Length: 386
Image (cartoon, rainbow, N blue to C red; front, side, top):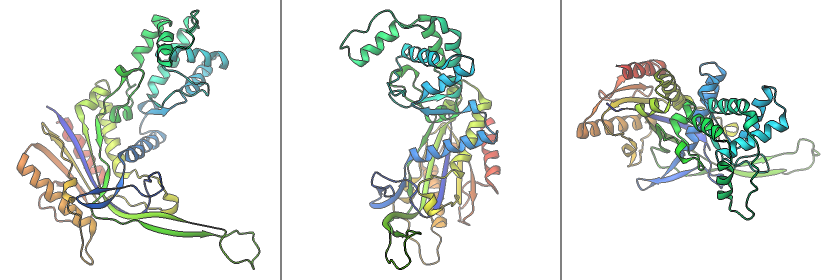
């Protein structure tokens, strides 16, 4: 029986620029014929991963439960080997050769060709294998063919490596039971067989209403200039908007458990951390300028079985417009609940929903009310175990 956990959130941000495009303007999109504010899914996932890092600092998650995304894997592995008593120059060379055995090239600047998303357990295991097979990791006597293309050169380096080393390293690249790799997936271009399909899908957040960009004109004055000198010493503009965002994500429970090598205890811990992070973690863009720390005032989480996911963004296909003294978030919540009930009536499906409603929206029986986020999460996790 396939189980999907879906989270819907309405979050009304004060003036802000949470997620910028290449010009520094807040990201946006056309939806339902009107311009909407937008926060990209990549930005939202990054915020959740930062939340995971905070949980590690609080000892709510183990450091081995998360991954690192880096081009500096050479430095990380070298430091691990130095901590084991190996000399740094030789350790760096051994790491070069070991990574080459898996067709992972380290460039002259000490960085990999692209960002590698590796679980901490994977990094530790690679270091352990290099330490154990230290004497067998040697440069090949076969000189590289001059003028050979980079791809073929990598294959040659891998072919010349110790087969036992390659076999040991091959077993290591399994995601390392890292929660963020299991949830968000990864692609290793040189080892496509080690790619991991994501258990989680995250939508771009969009405003429930039409928006227009606004501009803040600012000036700065030199504190040490003579008092009789008029005028600003720096000036510029910052673009911003204010929007009530609809945010959505879906987690395939069975895929999450499989990605975590059937560790259901870790999957439960990871799902709770993800759902909590999705609610409380915020994008950090321009927050020093705007301090738009506005938590969601409506959260609905559904556990649904043997049915397709349902993104409820079409509740806002017609942009929400409010009357004087009417709450935009409340109206948005009522439209979301109405759309959810219409889709449920048309398509059916087994499931249960918990709702944290701080807007006083009239939901007409949509979901079971929760008094707090923790109560909501407790209900969701308990239902999954049934």
